[in-house]
Image 1 (spheres, rainbow, N blue to C red):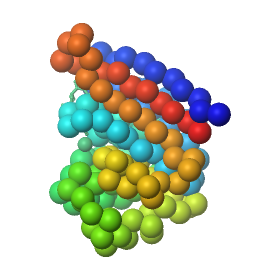
Image 2: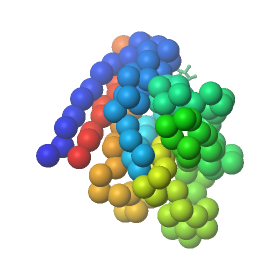
Image 3: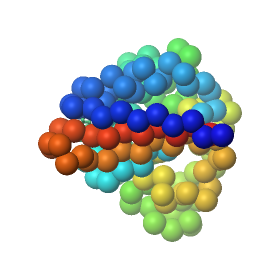
Image 4: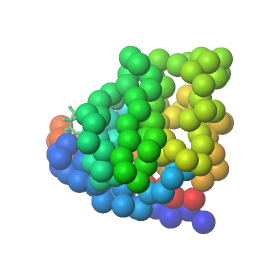
Length: 145
Ligand SMILES: Nc1ncnc2c1ncn2[C@@H]1O[C@H](COP(=O)(O)OP(=O)(O)O)[C@@H](O)[C@H]1O
Ligand SMILES: [Mg+2]
């Protein structure tokens, strides 16, 4: 059964706060796929999740480096991937994608569409989108399998 939950946030801070709350439910081995267009708030949400996990390092967009690594007391290894620039399966394999999917790690993936077929079955999917309301409004939907 898929559990779904959706909210609309009115600011980047509200999106981060949602991430902080959501992070309380996470455990090692979880894979979180963050779907959404450029600027929809994937990285803002990742910042909130990491705050909620107790990460003290700066969380930033890994668009150019592909992977950032953080840690916290409970989660020694947290990987934050941005696959925007990786288009082919070879690209994905070459960054060692499978090394990140591991029961001891927590993985946040931006642009998970690029690895859709490689995602574990129990991947937690979060979809973000702009809304018509105003430029600071975002719709966020959580799907847990
Ligand atoms: N409700 C909101 N939630 C998240 N970000 C918002 C919101 N309103 C405005 N923003 C802005 O939108 C941008 C989102 O950027 P970012 O998180 O890097 O997007 P993405 O990683 O999806 O490309 C930031 O500049 C942020 O300040
Ligand atoms: Mg981003």
